[in-house]
Image (tube, rainbow, N blue to C red):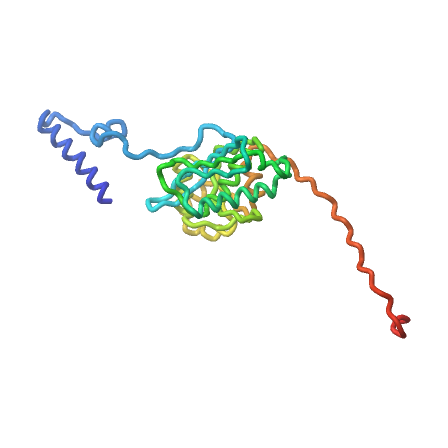
Length: 261
């Protein structure tokens, strides 16, 4: 609020200067078109949704000290020796989320249409712009996993969708914090559909009603559900091998009178 007061004071002083120069004929009307003449170039810009759906490009949501923001996450696959490269000034927790995301994708290789040892001849590079800004926290887990799955399966991710959630090795989606700020960031960026952890359903009470009504929220429990919603095409169905019957355990014959019971 103090910064707002300073900016209004800057406008008033510049208007006063123009009145002194031009006399009472000057009529000041501050509009969106001429506000740059009084305050200078725009200092901050809002990040908007991607223009089109792309392979390996996912919109995540982040919490910051000044509110929520959207966080683009991109992944690409190149020939290599099985390395996972994480860039974008990621903290330790976020790097661990990347490792967990890759382990989940490897465990679901068959469903993604990949061979079990696909990673041996590939390097996966995950980058989170903007690279000069430090980032950390576990809530980008499902975002990184979706980016990797998209890059490997060559299926684009929906541009009109954002997501946030922590991932486990078994593909479970765990709750996150800052739900209200993250939903506001998605709405501000022109995204009205968001994937959230199921356990965050109870936190909707703190979200304004008009925001809840404007958004389509998907509450999920597993990473499989995330991929089913986020990818533009369905993944190949995982072939289930029929369960083998379990042979009964042979027991030795009972000696004595009890054998006749």
